[in-house]
Length: 384
Image (cartoon, rainbow, N blue to C red; front, side):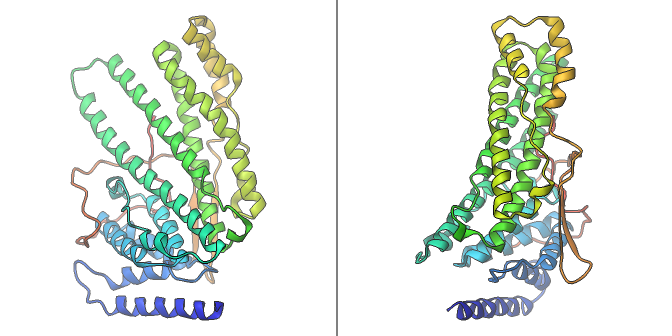
């Protein structure tokens, strides 16, 4: 049965590739792009085609139009499939696309609700398939939440640019900006909560593709948690002069960050136990010092002394920030000098906002050429 299932999957992939290659080239269709997406999301449950994945990322970085075309092909394939391997590879490919430096990523918004409809409705006969489907649904929930977050954050930055050119005083502008940053920190913590739910429920679920997806999840957790820590450190530098109202909002953020630090450490230990590759490179998560939390409580209660407040952040905030210069690398070699590399750094990119409507992903977009930088560095999620 396994041999027949594997042969059936190979036949389906070859048929799809043949159909894509025979598609007439036009402003709406590109056989090479469609073939790359199919090869990156095959039915093979034992490996990932990193060469084709890199090829897709190369298409994405050409222009926003190529991005939308890639998404159209990928979404169409994922909606049609009943196979968990195709669905999981599609989600990993989509996760990689989100990490590309293309402004169009900020305009995607919510993912299609029927993206995994056939996978969800497929009759489950084996417990392993059921566990894998649960894993896939959790992964999809995160990507949907992240896509919405990136879109909303982009819209907020446009609003900030408009407000900054208005009649508000510099102090009022800074105060509103700080309050908005606190809201985005809470949303980032929500992303961490969603990421921590992505894990195999049993040993039967663990396979090559699940471990690969967990590798991506682990890197994402480290990146977002580092951004939260940097954001908290930045906010603490100003909250002492801001006042009680801001301290009331910052306190639960710090308390949640303290809890999440322990949860992330346990998650990394779990990844290490099941054999995820990047766990050896993860630094130890530094917890929020109790003195920082107590200082905020004193500000809220009115017991904080101003001299201590001025000197406190300079020394203690350093322990809040997680090794910002640490780099987490993920490299795969495949029969040649080709290498797929994901790098987490402390350099955040900011794109100019494009004033255009969100194109419909259900239809093929037109194409145009426009060079873009490397697609494997994460886009800016929050600017503090």
